[in-house]
Image (cartoon, rainbow, N blue to C red; front, side):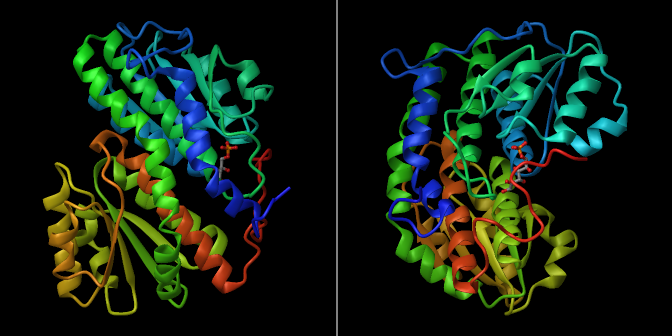
Length: 364
Ligand code: F6R
């Protein structure tokens, strides 16, 4: 049941810390600070290329995974939605690997993409939440997310669990390819191990996020901006908002603003920025300043080090706990999902069963 929560989605949002802890505990050892993955169906040291595919939120998790794997393991990664990949007929060399991401393990397009990838002799690893699902059964190997059943149609805890698994996978691949030293691995796994309790701190900021939701609820359009591995998280914020509150939203790479979407900016369009401190902070900040100079209402999620720069022009700054740059996408997914939840509640939509949507899309 829902326990003391109003909706399954609210309950599931509050399960982020536990689910992240449970998932990370499976694949990394807090004592040695090392990643331990199940046996992979390909040799990471030799794999020439990885194709990642999924649908919806799972695809956004895959996109974060792509940033991580390319950065840490230096393996070229292609990521495409399954409904495109299956008809794209991509040239794939024998000996390549594919990573599928799915909560249900039953999504028709992802299953069809798996069939195509198999025909092209790719080894198939799936990141799945349902161990007895078709995808888990038919893959060469599976890394399970430990999110438990997800009832709300909009994915929440399964998404962050997918990120946690992909983060461990990226580290494991980086080590296998000798791109990471033991020291690097320790820094990265330490950052990940901090995520569950920092996730709990984010949830304690519920009242602030609710106040932000009150501003967003009256908007017709909302833009979410981020850079690097936070760009897919901006898209996740936009997807969740569209899905459950029916407000039109778009997630954009902050650097793309000036190539078109900045024309939308006026004082009616909230711009939700994911702008924590780190190597891309200054770049994102200057994109946001440009939007602000055109009347945009900037609402930023950042950390203590990032707050002063934003406070000069942003209408609202929500300060999240500090976490290693590598782990930021996992932590920043939580407030954007929570924001969508509160906006939907304010609008009175059916949060757990949004119109026209099904939990598991088993037809094309
Ligand atoms: C978004 C959402 C959907 C699913 C997508 C894939 O909140 O829930 O976009 O992520 O339908 O489903 P799975 O992960 O079951 O393959």
